[in-house]
Length: 189
Image (cartoon, rainbow, N blue to C red; front, side):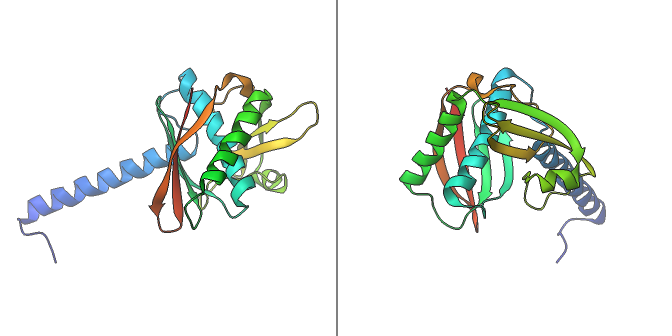
């Protein structure tokens, strides 16, 4: 059923709605590709912490965890991911402990540009359902002493050069976002 007001108002309403939807999609795509609200020191540190959290979630909950979206502000990181049940307090503590251990180890963060196929062969992870170009930007967090890779993700950046500058990581809240998707809000101190 159409809207109750005249044709001109209905047309303007639909044009505004489509414009808003396009703008929201563009904004969301920017977030997924590293287009952060700003490139302040705090947001860059939170962005790298979000990559560590994603790696920790996959280690604690399993490889069926995939990023569905993120939003990073000066105050916090918000991260949506696939998971079919509420995390236990023990799982949350394990994720925090892993992230804080990786921060304390002062791991190296390296950016590389490579063909998408090579990135996938190296095990790089990305946003579930996101389409990537043939040539991609990959950020790897690794231990240069052992070459242990902690995180390797498709991302436009920016990131810190080493994890020791991030600060203490803390999950404030874990909740349902939608069916089969959980949301974490976390901070760094």
